[in-house]
Length: 96
Image 1 (cartoon, rainbow, N blue to C red):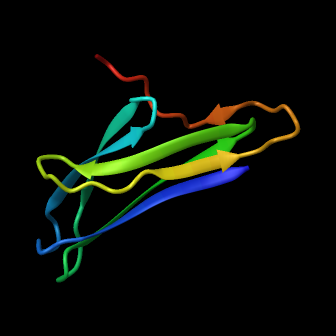
Image 2 (cartoon, helix red, strand yellow):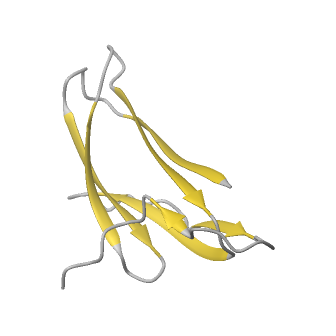
């Protein structure tokens, strides 16, 4: 099964400004992501594609680096009856 996680950001920054955020999985694994705003309204878009080949029940959230803003947890629940290759394009292991 293919799953796409995406985020839209709307800011008061003009186009070309950097936005840095953490993409966090419920088990603590996370990834720091940088994207840029575009257009006069300062919007930015980011996405990550996964191919899931086994049953998964995970949750994810995002938070802007240096800001108190964060999203609610979003659940990704996939029930696969057939065994497959597992997760493709997984998040990197957290470095503690």
